[in-house]
Length: 292
Image (cartoon, rainbow, N blue to C red; front, top):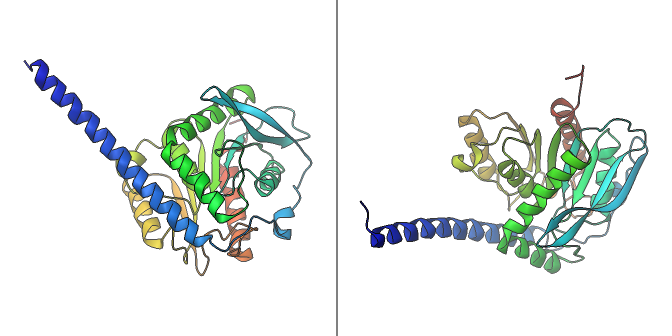
């Protein structure tokens, strides 16, 4: 039998391993924040006309609390079609590095107009950035306390499923939010029905990816220096080895944040194609057809 001293050493070794893994993850996340900061260095949060596309059908939206994290209510942008009778499938929308701003709310409205309940969540505790340094600091706060964001996402899932009654639920995010859309699939591996990642931080760690059951759509730019083509290819290879359901598209000449209409890298052709692919993907995996 192991003596008390041996058990103590074993426990310490296990704790050290867990801590080392968390430190590695945080280090990679910090490096990603720095890389994204370089990509966005000259961007502003001011919306362009491309951010003002109206929903295809009328929607109702409201700001409401959807979760409680560390004894504080978290408020998001909740929107659904005005003609909704029975609960529709839901999409949890995760903002990019500026935070839950008017641009993200407009896109959430547009998505709801396609026939979904949409909850645009807030991982920045009510803060929105107006310049790159503010955005960087907000992302670093999440990096240093990822469990708070994880609890936020779990609360969002419970809200759209239990409170809003959505029969199927997906996640969608851009940039910082794209990475957290993948994290959502890992946090809720047997619950999400679809995962959409726009140029978000990836992993090729098969132990982390293995539990995921939701199909994945990944949309990336070939000229992206923060989410490199090499990292996308490693991610895709890991999904292939694990026999996951996935689609990955890399747009030639497109940069990081090619779908963000407020950024300098906006690429209309790539953004429009990515939006079409997103709608087709969500329709395939979330829409309720023939009673199924």
